[in-house]
Image 1 (cartoon, helix red, strand yellow):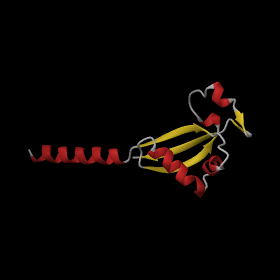
Image 2 (cartoon, rainbow, N blue to C red):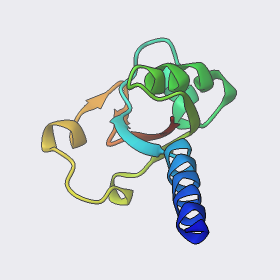
Image 3 (spheres, one colour):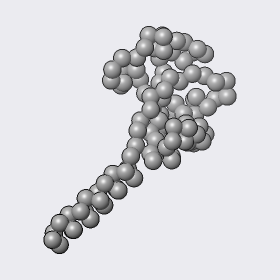
Image 4 (cartoon, rainbow, N blue to C red):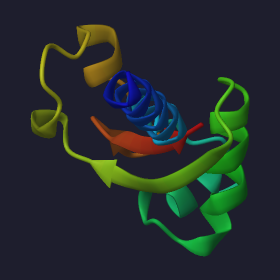
Length: 102
């Protein structure tokens, strides 16, 4: 009986730690907003931290752990032609990866 109780406690601890480590990577197109935030995010600079944080919080995540520019060929699956071919302000085919955690 003790081994069943110990097993249940261990299972609940593992599930709790898995819930705490819940993270997701969001891939978003890098569109210039005129304020330079897009470049802060793309270059991983400190000035992009608050934008990445806000992005994560708007999707019910607690924090942004990383953000960077990625190339279209790093994305598995397909990139819609309307997104991949847009060239606003010289930013053609640029995407950002923002990692959010709960």
